[in-house]
Amino acid sequence: MQGTDAVISALGMGLQTTPNGLMVDATAALIEASAQTGVPRLVMMSSWGVGDTLRRSSIPVRLTYWAGRRVHGEKAVAEMSLRASTLDWTLVYPVALTNGRPSGRVRARDLDDVDRMRGMPRISRADVAAFLVATAESGAWSRRTVVVDAQRRRATEGRLG
Image (cartoon, helix red, strand yellow):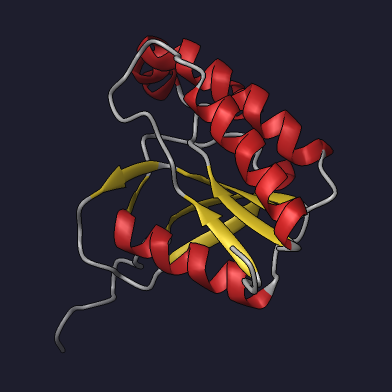
């Protein structure tokens, strides 16, 4: 990591429902390695449903995330250590991920500005990846938690005539 300006972590547990220490251990290792090599910035992708986001979710989303609640609990612990670090960090909470093509229509909001997430919003992995890179490069959202979803199209967009 020597000579690097920023690190992006998109580590996840996939469909795993039993925590195994991976998120806590990996976050601690990233914080330590960043301190040892002088990397000032860490942009970490988390997941909607972790920590305080679950209470802001619709009922269908809460039910969906119920199975992963223990893994999300481990992610929340890892995030607390990142927030307590001296790094210039950003936590990114994407909503439900899809394998769709990049749309370039990413809506980013500070978690504190999201009272309730309605329905089951989605965003492509490609759009999230582009957001992570742009955030790492620009330094935007420093020491903040950001929610990303796909900005909806207006009803008239894409129609001919």
